[in-house]
Image (cartoon, rainbow, N blue to C red; front, side, top):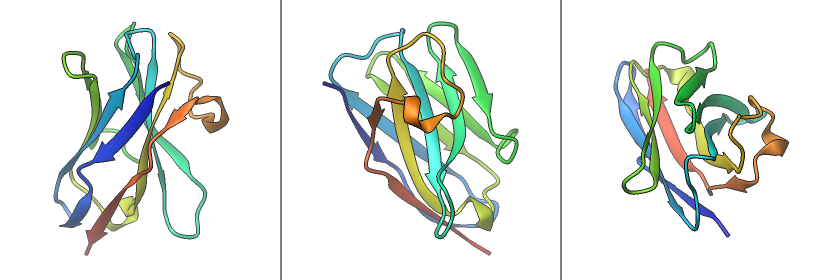
Length: 125
């Protein structure tokens, strides 16, 4: 069984930065797809970024491209979402997710097997 735990959320002003962490327990290796999603109040959950760790490839939603970076630390089984130049519209609950596959199913949420509980990010203007 795989468990994901997010941390690193908080409140920042516009233009600020945060780094979210997703610690995994259980067996996760390079054959896993790891992703980040977010859900703002009154909106559906949407994909933010994912990484296909076996190939080292990353994909970002257009809304965060150039500002967010997803990465993975193999040594401690943690993956990260570095968020720079934050905007009020980035305010949301952020979730990490994982799927046991070499290729990520894009942002099709129902295909991700494991989810964390979420960490809140609030960006004030």
